[in-house]
Image (cartoon, rainbow, N blue to C red; front, side, top):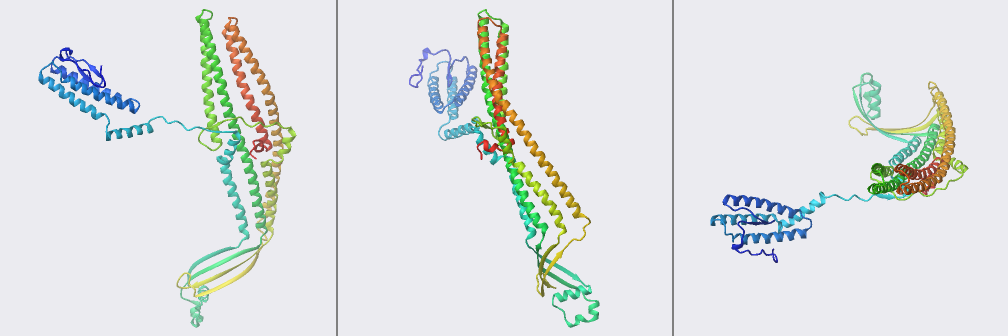
Length: 560
């Protein structure tokens, strides 16, 4: 055995017939001739290479360099004892020693040291950074109120409707522009030899001379050029259509604002549904785990009874089958839970999964009349009322075509025959005008009839929405009452199922009931657990939906 890192000296008389020492330990070889020695050397070299690779793959830098130090010591022992070989001729011994020395140098070169050690450390860091499994970031955990706030701020549907609302606000400015002055600039070029246009062009350019009044020049003038630069404006003084249109655009924007509030309530409802689904899925996992634990316990009891000669092997098989089914349900519950978390993340506008950390706040179930009174202020109902008012105003908009349009305008003009923006001549004009359509092919009458029919349509929609809201509140209230009563019933059913399973388990352990009764009792208990979780979720969801139908969901969830 090595002592203090040094190889033990073995006298030549006590050496075996042949031997060889390499980095992996002591390997005996048959040294009967030069060929056998060289073959053994090759095998030893391959083993040394494998040993060096094992050292490189070892974990921890300290262990690695300890093995490196041990390898060097062993190689020195190989060199020392190799010189003491007594078998074979001198030439063979010299050849073996030379090969051992060369192999030792190659092995030492393979071990990182100096600058190569730094390169090895960098390579190891690169490996651990890019080829080791990364720990996923922790999932976001939110309460129901936080999830709803995230949805109201980051939901894609809410953001899209917000952009639509901002776009609708620009309609107010568009309608107001009909009451503001319009200013335009125009640059025009004209070349003509028409007698009246030629004369007026020269007159505008202030180039009229006595020869231009010659009859021949008036009747057959030469072609002239004219660069016209003009700035003009027009201002409406009275336009009933523009005034009514401005009021319509403002009320349309108010209606969209109410629709935006209703869209937020819809986003809150969807988020609440996704949140409750994620929370319920988590509870289903706990119930499935308890069912799997019970199934394992039943299998253990069945195996013990079979081993003691008190039970049947078929009971063990049935219990194992039930355990497989319970584990399969557990896998399904976990999959459903992961999907529910991803859906919750999607509802708040994220691509990552979001976990529900607590149940929704307790929302007290109010009397039916409370929700009916609150429904009067529902946002979509308010929006439809505004749209009904606008529909009536559109009748006036159609009738405004019977009124005249009064306005004023003016322009300043430059004329030049050589270059644009030239000023050989300049002029200005101011005018006022009244435009009144006497007959337009019965267009105004058709527009007025159409507006009246559209107003009647929206009025019927408003009545229908009121009745629909009342019906939905009535249905949601009945569902909430039913879910509230089902919670108590499901709790009682769960208690009886647990007690029944306990009694059947005792009877089975005492050989008083078959395993089928135990399996049936366990199935009833599993169904009771799932039903209790579902009834609790149904009640919370029914109360939230009742607030959504009455327009109080954001208030109930402590958002407003």
